[in-house]
Amino acid sequence: MQLSKSTVVLRTDDIIKLVLIGLLAIHFIVLILSFSSKKFLAMISILNVGLAISVLVYWVRKYMITGISYAGVSEMSLVIGEIIVLISGIMLLMMPHPANYLKGAHYLFFGIHILIMILFLAFMLFFKMNKLF
Image (cartoon, rainbow, N blue to C red):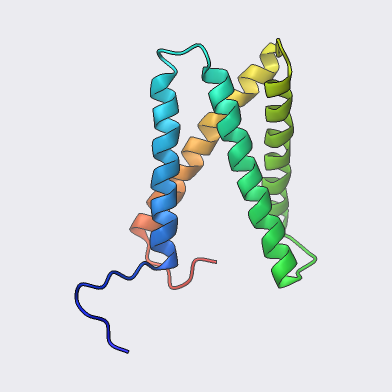
């Protein structure tokens, strides 16, 4: 089968680049909106919980499909970190007056998520990979 010149073919890494750009755009929109809104903490908590759920769903799907029963230390530390983000995000959203350490942790998680997405996008843009995962 021969493709015409006008046919656009999206590879998996192109789709992931688009998703990362979209996620970064959402994070920066929330950051910009925070200057005019008092709901910044709730917005970043929702973003943090959403990212934690997506990472955990990906990880569970990956291990259910491949059937691998052992994960490396770095991968398990990522999963445990995202579980901590998920639990603390749910706590922050449920509490009427959250503690200051919980607020500070979510500002930190928000910054870490942005930094990781920027670094991952830069890695994908500058290095060519044959297979992503």
